[in-house]
Length: 265
Image (cartoon, rainbow, N blue to C red; front, side, top):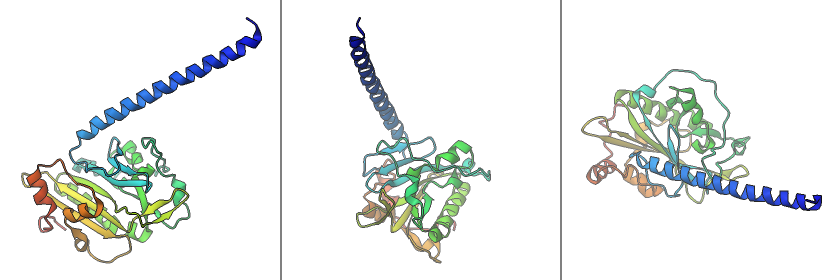
């Protein structure tokens, strides 16, 4: 065969090869996506997603908002045995490869004046290095004022760990309240929430209980009790249905309750 025919033939073969390779990758991605969706259904504590983009990791799940370049919520189970005093070297933040649209670049936070505030805290995942490292995905962070992050928000995270130990595990959903009028940072316009929330469910006994917090994103000296709201209030504010897989009568009773006496502060 003459050389002038060989090169076009090689180009054609390579092109066809790339075409079928892409088809294989897309098929594989779709299979993984379907398997992930099936897995999500087994997590009864996952809220509804207003974005339709639920990402399931090994140690937490999240609903990603491309518009705000962060999770609208992160949900996870915090067991008593998860609590550990192990110290690990802090890894670098990385983008979440499971977010098909790509999660925010950590460089958006550089020189912004805001911390990369964990939603599923690294301190809740010290029982294993890989679990700890998984919390350093940028899909699991939101811009937080340092005094807020190290202050009232840190106190709430510590109190959550206290309850997980006392009640032999709790289920946690947390995130920033996302809306259209928020300040943004970075070249990808990462939204800065004005409020952060946390909903905690104790299902360890025959009489489950739930508590919800809505905390303004600023430094405060107020007590945690000052920020307790009903889960119903949070649902109206965020459009998220928390713990929707609970029996309807139980969900209704827990979500309208603001009783804090059952929780040891």
